[in-house]
Length: 111
Image (cartoon, rainbow, N blue to C red; front, side, top):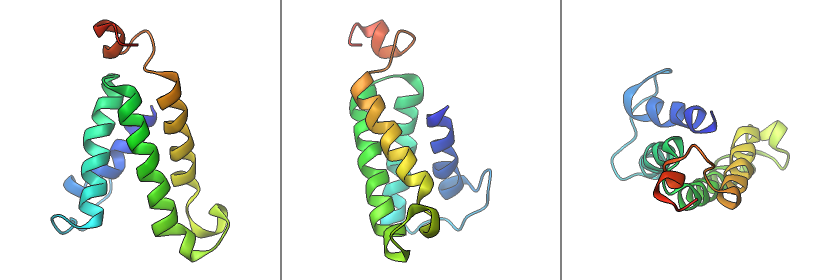
């Protein structure tokens, strides 16, 4: 479910669904964030290379908070960074916990 929630951000950036956003300029910071969300989110959704994908996403969400939200104020509740912080720690937990029994990693014998 977390991967699907993350997918909303990537799809909004590139495809205007479910919310219309102006497309990011190619190779801009937002474009790279969208590509990370799209690729690592898909891997996480499939449970493939779960640990590395979740670790990369955790780092991206930390950057999203510190670059995009923290300058607006210290507290995530007031600076709009609650979801970035929550995603960051959920992905960090997934990086430590692996994909689980139903993941493609488990089918590959890597979970």
